[in-house]
Amino acid sequence: MFEKILIANRGEIALRIIRAAREMGIKSVAVYSQADAESMHVKLADEAYCVGSARSGDSYLRIDQIIAAAEVSGADAVHPGYGFLAENSHFNEVCRESGFEFIGPSPQAMEKLGDKNTARSMAIANNVPVVPGSDGLIESPEAAIKTAKEIGYPVLIKATAGGGGKGMRVAEDEKSLAVAINQARTEAEAAFGNGGVYLERYIGRPRHIEVQVIADNHGNVCHLMERDCSVQRRHQKLIEEAPSPNLPEERRREICEAAVRMIRGADYSNAGTVEFIVDQNDDFYFIEVNARIQVEHPVSEMITGIDLIKEQIRVAAGEPLSFTQDQVKCEGHAIECRINAENPDKNFQPSAGKITQMFAPGGLGVRFDSHVYGGYTVPPYYDSMIGKLIVHCRTRDDAIATMRRALFELQVEGIHTTASFHDKVLQHPEFVSGKHDTKFVEREFLS
Image (cartoon, rainbow, N blue to C red; front, side, top):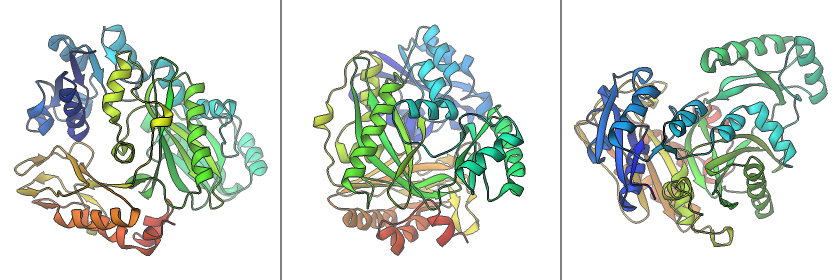
């Protein structure tokens, strides 16, 4: 087992990893930018090293600075968290070549799955359903028109290296197809340095359902059930829950088994998430694999009782999973609300600044993963999420009621947060019925 782990990240995920490491008797090393010197993850780590100035490009994305911190601290391994360098296969490789174990999949698996077109081909090879679409990247306008006619309009143009909704466009007809492809390519090239795109049939009003998986280096692959992440704004998840409401049990079993096939076929180890869209007939289609731990992993932990961060560390250290698939049981219902420093009354305008006072909620079944506190200044340079509020109860109705109570208790003064918006969503009849889809927020709250 490792003696010391460096966390190449910031905020609540860095703090989450520090807590798991301490419980395992492993020392933790934090890295931080000048803007994050007072962050809780810096205060609670055993060691901390500044890796640059405020901008992420000058700090958290500086591979040389992070490797230098790992060398100076004498760390055995690097945990990338999520975001920043978490799915950067080059960073993964550099860590390993520098003598540090990378707590995640191999660089090869990460690179293959990080390319959506390649991942789609792997899904087909492993009998995982995919949305009808192009056989590969679209190389010419003529090829795009031909494919679109075959699969039918509307079509979705997707960047092969995309993420977070970037490099995605919908074309309703042939006239708009060329413009949509050019827009998607331009955006993808700017965001990811890769302008490759492919086509899929556009699925209207889908649910976004993903399966948490984890695999070791001994041939064991397990899923930790599925999560529903359909409450989104501009392709960014806002609320996640597990298990998914209104999903037939047979379909639940099939989607989880498909995720396991995908991961096993990719020769993948460590934690990952296989994402699907589910149409109104409950048919499901593969979207992508996120080769890392995800923001919403706590809801899977709550319904299964399995600590995913500890399992990640054990797997990276060469140990087998501490459980078998038969031992994974779904108990109760969990919901997570992402609390962002944003003003929902002003089109979710970012709200950086000093938190003058904060009261975190508590009580049975309530968990608040956050790196902020009263007196902390939220910097304007990074993602606006300041915490994740998670509840776990016996039933979904109980979980909604407990979450609303917890949101009421969460008091953050000095900045605006999205807590009040989450409460509105939780009261909406469409959410309460569990029949919401990925366009629910835009349709009911932003139109």
